[in-house]
Amino acid sequence: MTDPDNFKETGKASNRRLYFEDAYRREFESRVLEFRSFEGRPALVLEATCFYPEGGGQPGDLGEIDGVKVVGVIEDQGQILHLLEKEVRAEKVKGKIDWARRYDFMQQHSGQHLLSGVFFELLGAETLSFHLGEETASIELDLAQLGEVDTEKVERRSAEIIFENRSIKTYFVEEREINQIPFRKKPAKSGLIRVVEIDRFDYSACGGTHVRQTGEIGLVKIIGQEKIRKNVRVYFVCGYRALKDYQHKEKILARLATGLGTSIIQLPLTVERLQFEARDLRKRCLKLREEMNQYEAEKIMAEARGIIIDRLFEDRTAEEARHLGLKIVHSGRFLVIFGIKGESRNHLLLTRAAEIPLDLRKWMDWLRENFEARGGGSDSLIEMALPKSQNLEEIISELKNKIAPELEGNHS
Ligand SMILES: [Zn+2]
Image (cartoon, rainbow, N blue to C red; front, side, top):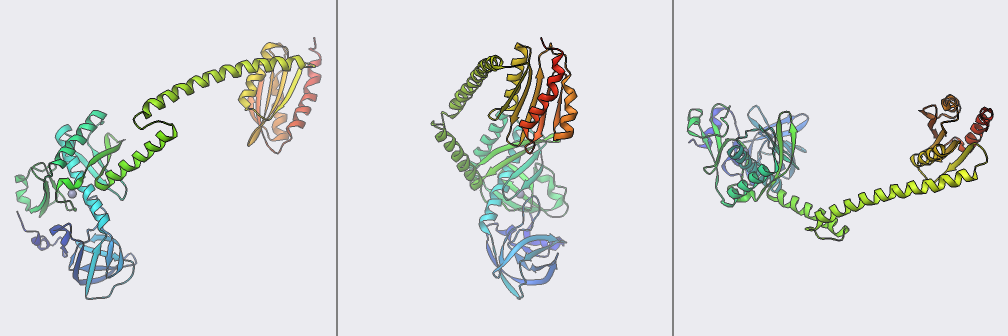
């Protein structure tokens, strides 16, 4: 095992990374090595820093240096650059990281090591990539699918290791010592390698920040998954995020339960019952509509003074009007012209009994050209949509005048 201080001698880094020595350190003082600018922003290179630079799936720290906001921390050719909101000119500066944010990342990141270790132990699944964001954390697994039973097993096993409160140790090894460490995944890196070990359970090469003991992960909960290529991407929450997630979901359930006048426990049964009732009501509704249509159709036919029946509706859908129209032409020798006033557009329905030998499509072009109508149909039924600006009453009356002479020859 090697001393982390040697890390800078490898030439890989010229700044002392205080977060390697103590991930819990939030404040520090350091000499400024260089004032630079990066993409138009003032940037500082420090002799030592607690700020973790973006990398390895973990976002960079935020915070402040001499009271000025640090808006990003990146690594550029082995140097850690602190990007600042405005320039800081001093030989020595005081830095402070946004601790709540960093601790959240430490919980998620440590939880990821644990979760990846458990997936490997129980299912032989390798972690192919890791993403940690401000809101979500996910790993991509070399797994075709993940079922409910396995998910619960993985969560349960993770909890076990959390409750054992195992230590999470970090140390450096030389490249030639790699074979002495039972890595879950052999590091591809050369030179000094930083090992993160969940005591006797998982060994990973990682340069991120982690909590000291598994107990601090609090809980690992899988909250979603999606198929990606041939693999599965698993979303998870740890620590305070898991608590927040639980609180949020509890609130949703409580609101639903209150709204439905039941308890959270009774919610599934209540929803099932409501779904059943809704299906039943829908069926009865259809049956009643059918009966109503029948009555209405009979009434309209009794009132009819010729072959053409025309009506203007304002309180029904085009579909309901079509049902009614078809009922009429199926029961008697009629030609139906229905206008239906809609929310955004009006509709026109034209249909006829089978024994009237008229091709209704011949009025489609006339409607299109004169009234911006759109639609289509067959020789016995056409349906057109019209803009609200067109006068439906007038169109119906004009249509009636056009059709009436054609029916005269067929009058019985
Ligand atoms: Zn890590």
